Length: 304
Image (cartoon, rainbow, N blue to C red; front, side, top):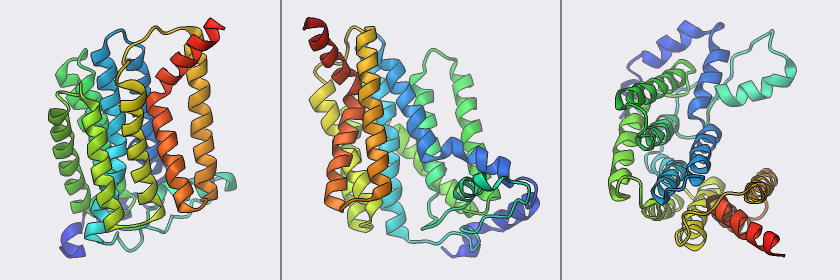
């Protein structure tokens, strides 16, 4: 698959069309498929479903939470296997003279991309996570959910092309892979009610990712997948429903914030890889099990 064949001229045409006028809106639009937003979306769904009195909804929320984890390890494995480059100017941000200096680094980070280009991680992740949310939100009409997911996936894919960070074939392949993996996992997990199976799949793919591309991020992704599986089976699976109190919510939020902030600080510092792997396992386990951890802590506080 040559670069001209992957592009068919679409990337160049769109990038030239939006040059000088559309880069900032495109950079904002592409965040709908960025990893931070996908984890926020999946985590929000998980938290919302965790407050339900129905164990099945809690499990379906966990199914959605597992999807961005699968996305991370899957993209790492596939890009390491194909090793196909991005468009030549993918790592160069356009200059916007009126943009305040404070926002320039943020814009450059969102409007550019480095590393291998095939398949598009944004296309895979957007299709997986937004599609997963559409599957579990079954209280909305199917047509509405389908249109919403298709619209978001289309906009994110368009933004990746117009920013010049992917070839046309990259986003088409990413969308197709995302759809195939999503429905495969939905079937494997009995319509999202057995999310533990998805966590196990994430661990297996994470091992492949490390074997194909041993890097800091791939090792952390494997640790996160392993921690999520341990968190589900060790902290959640035997107690998928519980009473929600103010103490439970407060303690759960505290555990979550300490975990996320602590992990973020260590990720920036980048300690030795074995240590970071262990931190990833612990952080993912706590995030998956945080409602249950908060509930158990609350029972002890209220009993004392």
